[in-house]
Length: 120
Image 1 (cartoon, rainbow, N blue to C red):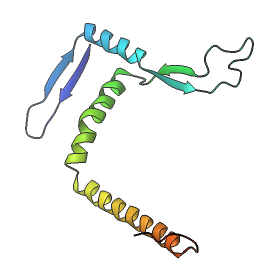
Image 2 (tube, rainbow, N blue to C red; image 1 turned 180 degrees about the vertical axis):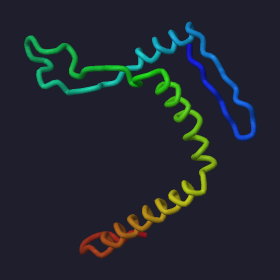
Image 3 (cartoon, rainbow, N blue to C red; image 1 turned 90 degrees about the horizontal axis):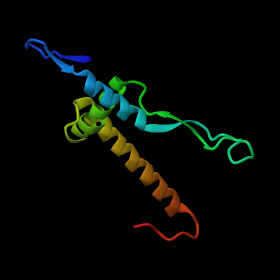
């Protein structure tokens, strides 16, 4: 069983319980989601060598990592793209300005090179 406690400013804490049957399903799901953990194995394909080029393991080490990772990918990241915090909005503006400066520098080098077609 997993217990999750939700505490929000000024509100009493709420506890949510994930029953054992669901925990077992989450664990099976976690174990199915594999990724290469090492490799490539230099002995792959040689006689007597390993049958797979990479060694595989679960993408997430724990159910908590699975759940929190999914929450971040499917909820938090999209929300921050649409409604960035002030700090993220400032950084995003700085990144866009740096990208434009780099593009301008590339265009300036190309435009100043002999034998190139002018960029408009």
